[in-house]
Length: 287
Ligand SMILES: [Ca+2]
Image (tube, rainbow, N blue to C red; front, side, top):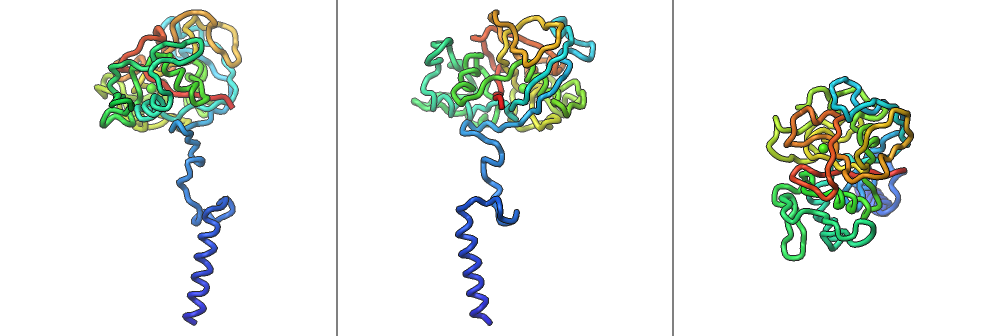
């Protein structure tokens, strides 16, 4: 009896070892490894993605408490896209700078523009190597001009979200519960802002919104692709913003702003070369 047991044991072990290097989809769940990065939608950049199903929404301040530039509220229809689940981190941006090999844009329309401020507190250059500052690996990269945010995205085949995509994702897309802040009417549950944090926090903290996206309200401001302009009154499909103008849109508020600026419809803007300890970003890509 004992001999039969060991024969069966070794046969079973051999089969498990044989299939462990193969496609595991047909295996029962308990025999599959759950640590495959592919399953989480993580790219080489470290960016993790959320798919935002397309749809139609009312863009602008739908609560009647906004600034002039949040009107007119207008209908926007978007195609399905993906957006990063978290703000891009110091670790991810340091890895990008090392792979890119320059702290200015190397080619194209924005050649020579600064990618990250030399005094950025979240990333440091040690010798020839960029590293996240100690204790700040998972905090959002800040001190990054629009050119740096756009170049990070371009380097990995992504792009910045359009302003409409940003707002639609912040609203929870077609799962929206109609919250004032991204994921809640209670800002303390979903956002880091001036009243509850003196500086940026890890990008995975706070509750996510209806789509599982973190910190669209608060923590770091987020650069969008669009130039700043007045909203049109007419319905729009996949709007890209004005074709001319200098300033680029920032969204979401930060740890240096009042909670009012963390509303999902609040619009901010800055010269694309500007940055400070609150300007960060997340990525998007079309499907
Ligand atoms: Ca944010």
